[in-house]
Length: 116
Length: 209
Image (cartoon, rainbow over all chains, first blue to last red):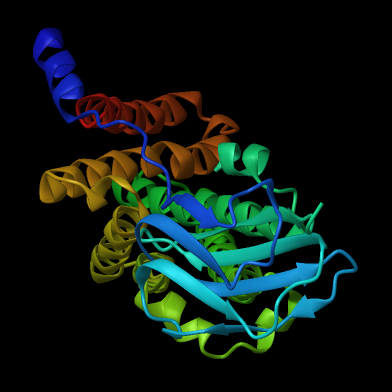
């Protein structure tokens, strides 16, 4: 009886699985760029609903991004820059509703060094 | 949940979300367990013990409902990464359509039906027991496991596991007054009946992982 119970436990045990994950971004976290990107992008391992995609400069000022797709679920989210960024440090703040319904989020930092 | 708290960015509203989830999880499972305990110990409780158990039931139902409702605006703030999320009315239907929303509606319906446990009748116990099952099922809707195959089997196992677990959580609140009884023989009889059901619950928890 105990062996049967143990076998049941082993058969039905599933690995602990996390929420959806950010797999990559443009610019990538910690990137040092020589020129302004023309867009920011987030890539996930599955379809999520990105609820916040915000770019801030080193002083905390929000920089306008043109995003599309609204609150539609997608595995990628893009934000186009209206004007090129000047050299400095920037943060991409993002939040999303993952496939399992839980909120996820993070911050991606990058630097534009400019021409040497 | 604890891992999320440790690995989180330290954002206050993320932490608050996790705390609220812990509160409504415990309260709703305790309410479900009290419903089951009242059913198992029907006729074994003194009027005072019955009243005490029903007071706990009411308290846990209310705590579960309030914490569940409070989690909505906090989630909206987390999704907006700012307090202005409170006024993002487009976020609330988004959450409602998600698995978190499914779990919320199941849990609230279950907690509402659990209130029938305050009504001392067979019909009341039956309705409340359905509520207890819905509370357990709400965790199936919210969990990660059912995103992957075999979904139905995992859903059934998780639901049974939590249903059995709730018996232990809620039952302990009803047992306290019984242990204070002057008539130790009747107290032992009631605890024996509860213990038999508790052993079945343990077996179910082991079998369902």
